[in-house]
Image 1 (cartoon, one colour):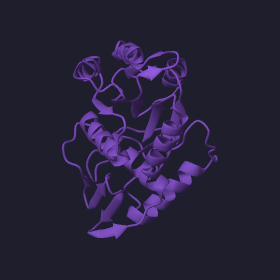
Image 2 (cartoon, one colour):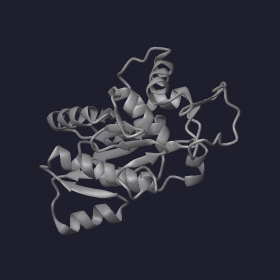
Image 3 (spheres, helix red, strand yellow):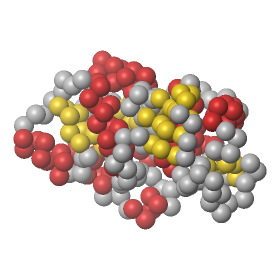
Image 4 (cartoon, rainbow, N blue to C red):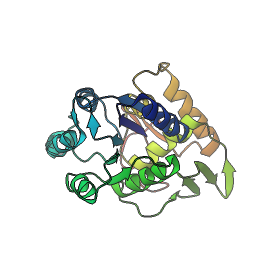
Length: 241
């Protein structure tokens, strides 16, 4: 999961980035509308955490511009995504402010100061809705994944995963049966300022297969990786494994 935080207060932005990273998100931070739009235009994020009072504009204007984007172009891979889940976090606590934010296209509205755990819970709920799920757990055959506790069970037994391994597994499960390229997976796991070794994704995939079974994650030669829609299905693609 990759999050964009738009917040001009360095202290708040840093604390929020730390909380999100500890929860397994790859995080990028922008301090204004212009930089945020530039980031949204070149990178695919899973969620946007948006302050409203920014030094070069209002966050609501950024949100309105995002929601006006053409969905057809986004479906063909052109950014920004108009359907990107957006959580407003702001000190504007009036009822009219909350109504305006939600009616402008926000998925949720959180008033500062807030508890980081509440923000993370709201993000999980938003991402469940965006994925069309209502259950908090992800169940896939003998595999059970809890995004809240970042725990994994396979055949009823706990499985220990590193933070990147968990993030990669969650990304593939939520996207199934879509084939995700190596570049897309790197984008989901690492922020702009994080270096990535050329074989990092392959190493994580190898570790997940060793811990969860060789057939869980399939490879499409020259394209990327995927998990079939249902256990045991090959989703009609040509695979190497």
